[in-house]
Each structure stands twice: as structure tokens, then as C-alpha cells.
Length: 205
Image 1 (cartoon, rainbow, N blue to C red):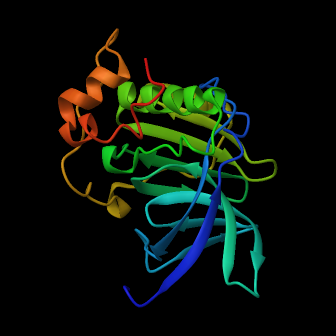
Image 2: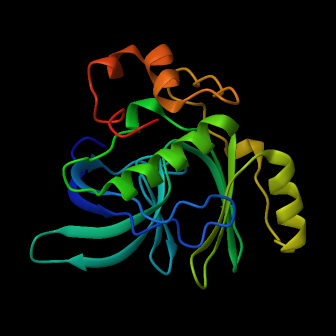
């Protein structure tokens, strides 16, 4: 898969009406990625929804001249399982500290705070569940399993996650963030290299 490399511009335009996290702006960056998938090399769900490199996203446009895919990140890495029917996608995800980085050069403090809000919520839950409604990209999540079950039943979703398709987490799952513990203190304690790399820590409380 290493020969399948493309350039992407990941444009995170917000949390798309996230019902459980009040964070309204996310960041943008550009990087070179391999096309990877938990169900094959690359998964296209239709209508622009994709799985790529541990992330569920939605393609906004494709620049053929420059080979650039522009898409916003809906569920961050590591996505370990997903399923979908005609109307919804359900996702199981565990956050990856190695990918929790923030481009502080191009972001406002409000955007930085918003990302920290999302990261903190994901780490508090750790085993995160998400629901995406295709028609308007409305997202519920991150949720714990009990909240996910209630939402799944309330929305009358016709598909659910199967253990058969679940991937193993790459590396060691991060410990849960304890109630009252600051994100900055958590990262310094459990991910020492960020004590020197202040990209994520800048602006955190």
C-alpha cells in the first residue's frame, strides 16, 4: 500500500452539528497519506463519505489538475469498526495520542480551544461511538456505549456494529482521562514526547 500515496487537504469545518460536543470549529492541515482501510485498501461509502487512514471523512471536491482531495474529517483516527445502512453510519473509534496535533500557526485561539474540547471528550470516554446521518452530515458523538445504544434505538437505525469486522487498536490504547484532570497534565503524564512538542499543549488548560 505504500506505493498508493496521494496528497490530501483535510478541511475540518466544524463538528457538523455534533449533538454531544459543543465544539464548533476545527483545524486544517495538508499531509501525504497512504490509502488504508479496515475493510480493504480504501472504502467509498457513496455520496462523498469515505474511510481513509483510520479516519471517516467526507470529500468536498477533487482537484484533478493537482491530484488533491479536499475533505473534512468527521471521525478522527483510530476508527476500528463501522457499519452503515441507507441513512446512517455507526462507528466505533478509540483516540490516538500520536495523531492529536494542532496547527497553531493557522488557527485562532477559539479553534484551538474547540479541538481541545473534542480531544478531552474523546479521552474521557476513550471507547467512543459515533452516528452519522448521511443526508445532512449530522453527527452524534463521541458517545459512550450506553448513550450510543439509546441513540441508535431512538433513531431506528437498521444496522449495527459487528465484532467480526472490528480491527485491533494499533499500539496501546490510551488510559481514560480522569474527571477533573486537565488535558495538558494528562498528555505530559501519558505521552512524554509532548512535553517537548508543544504543538498540542499550546493553548490547553
